[in-house]
Image (cartoon, rainbow, N blue to C red; front, side, top):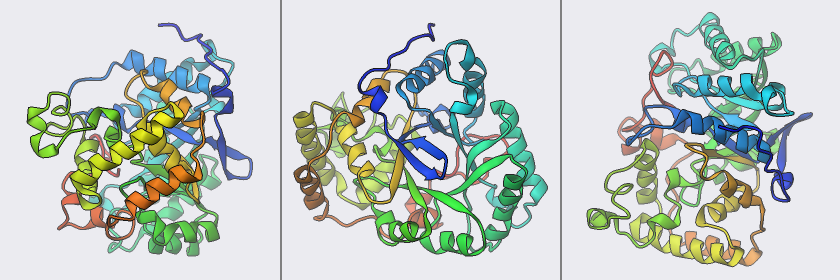
Length: 380
């Protein structure tokens, strides 16, 4: 496998960056490593050599920011391997790579978690990554009824003071409780939230609060687990078993993401609206010589308060597609067409991640809340 490829061209040189804090910028598309977790894929195994090749191609293009978590089993090891080999085939150093980790204390220990527990998890991540510090730790809290989330966040502030963490963000917080963190003295610079053409919950109050507090959005779910693609045009989920092209994802989801985002589709535009939206996005994509995925991503990136989106990495096939996100501009008419279509349908109820926290909600059904000590996935 060759790693000395330099694919920088007019597109890659134009990969834009967002400034999250003075002197700290990130690529506007992050490389998401959730998909490396064995608990994510429902079909098949990953080619880890190809994953390393993908990392190198992405960095060559300018996508130097990675999103992962210790609960994404294998992700830290894969990124650590890449960082240790980087100097041998690149002019970049490990310090040129931005690492956004997550701190997700298990649900079962929320009432008892101590500073030493937090420190142990961060130290373990640093060892796997071969780094002295993590650029951004994104903090998640499972149950607001266990009212220790501000106190436990102070553990991260202590580690920040020790130099092990540069910045603190949050993930899957709602506006009220993110504000409580800020009011409690936690220096939050970013909030990772689900945001897509199907899910606009962040627009209710969080975007406005973030503008006032200097907190920018880093968005996941923008491609709905890959369901925003030409591959899925012209299929009814109810008849998916009769459609060879579609049965792999709709009747038999390939990943846990696709299970979750089908729930989001049902709660917003529904299956008929989903198909109509694909047709609309495809029409816009053709006018820009790109694909549906690039239109859906650019639509969210152009939203107020959004610093970046996260696109999952499973192989090296779609690296160039990520670069093409920035090869065009959506026109006002493009955005108006999408807005007018979406305004026909309800948005997902509640604040960000509110339904996912509801024990009586179908959205809770695929979430695992005790993963920090060696399972596969929890918070997204």
